Length: 254
Image (cartoon, rainbow, N blue to C red; front, side, top):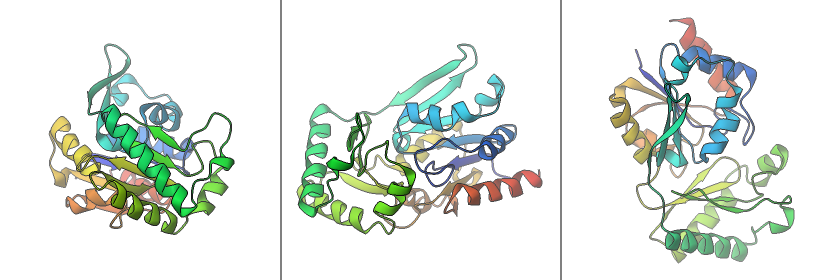
């Protein structure tokens, strides 16, 4: 019997950059009665709230105490404090200003050289490169672009693979992981989901065999692959419908 269900977000719990569906929300709330539930993603904290927490149907404070938000690949961790009735940050490992500047410069230069800098397609107020404190994220079309456009931009990851290759040539001191539909997450070495899952083990006082992980980018180079490489049991999904199917099966046998 697993004790922890851990999840990637985009393409695993939702359609990329959109709130989870009513069905996923209901399933997650039901899971909170039996498991520690741990979303872990490159997204920033506000997006965890918008896409997951705010979509849960009437969770009790007791249920929320079993929901653990591992933000920016788990380099930031938030848990629900039932006394404060609010989320509190447990730890954060931010990049330095110099590291953020170097990564941002490297990604923009690489994307421009390769013809993949899509500034003209940005919606007002949006940005291609975002400082998420403990990582820098490249989103080719920005955060606000429509889902259809995002799915069409790089469905086979070939564009991002070229950008990553060039970034590694220009600034090899950083790691670059492909995630979501148009994103690349840039981090210092080791600050990936292995880092987050290692801290999850410590914070929740569980073992690897206690965890079941769901993710869509489990191939080498994908941002879920470090979890696979750790030896944690993983279900590879291609959509939130796959995840819902699996969760219905898990809950059905409890």
